[in-house]
Image (cartoon, rainbow, N blue to C red; front, side):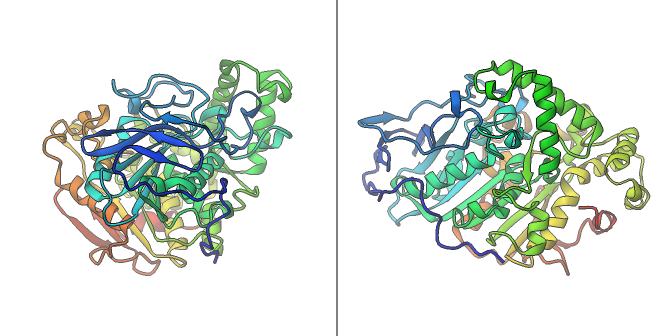
Length: 509
């Protein structure tokens, strides 16, 4: 078992002076930053954590940031990574500028920290490695900071063809797993600088949803991330977004053919040329293979093993973990019917033909009401989220404290749409971002009367991050599989609540 050893060597060699003054002027290793105060919470925006990946650095690993003189203003958000429109970032308060110079952090801290350095919670946003950014209002960390007396850090990393598309095998100038490398660079920055904001670098919890949760599990399996965090939370990880190096290499060379130019020119080609080619490969891969074109790569130094295999062999950064999924993960995707998340009879047949032809009959026997709609949604949910999460939890729980949950709560708005506890619907409850664009859609009254499920869920996440013992949430193991089922009015502990479906998928992941 790989234990979190002494913290990895920092990218910046300095000692940070902790500023006792509750103002927003802080002194980091690299220079002074000045933020602002909003609602009793100090906030710093647009903080760069590495040199921006532009020009010759476009496809290279992140490099340490050069120091600056004077005071750098940290009031405005940096740009979000280049991406298409998404309903997650549809609010008026969400940044509209998109640019490759996107490696920035947002930090929230309580206005005073009289009790010494505070626990740190680092949010890794999701979006299938194609969409998202830490600056989106859905992920606003101010309520976490205020309610939990913690320092919250949201990070933004490269996405799409510039970070979530694997080109590492193209040779000089192309590093693998750029989005994961960005996240590790941000965690190094946090180790070196978070004390200036009142945070404790030895009490860092990483947490994320969807691709962000997938990244959390990859960080647990990456030797390069050892010692950079002490706890982890993975909300609805999508482990099929991680593919082997050979698969990614084939697609990288297909990409070169589609672009029709030598890789040496990629650093200067227009964004639209590269994004169009990557999008076409995403479409092809979704229709013909078990994995998508965007995602992480295992079989390389940064991520030697798939996280499930790493957990089974004990090659993990063994820290306490919360992990779970939502009851109706795939319901939202049923509208668009993506091949990689099958929610129709034809889509499910096609999936098993591509991924596990001998397992179709056995797996579908675990869904007695198949092919009714709720069974179709359940199969799609388990393909991408449920089955790999159960497999990871079984393996990881033998090495570290693990808590498993299933989020059942739904709102009248989601019930009217026939979605139930769909993918991502738990985020507003963890963050208390009821005032965001999506938060207002899900819980119109949440800004004024936060629902009890949100109060319970946020407090549980905060207790976990601050090290408070959770006596009412038993640890998970592969014998009893005790799971917290999060409901609207109260939570209950159930042994193996999805046991029939879990057993149906045994051995596939």
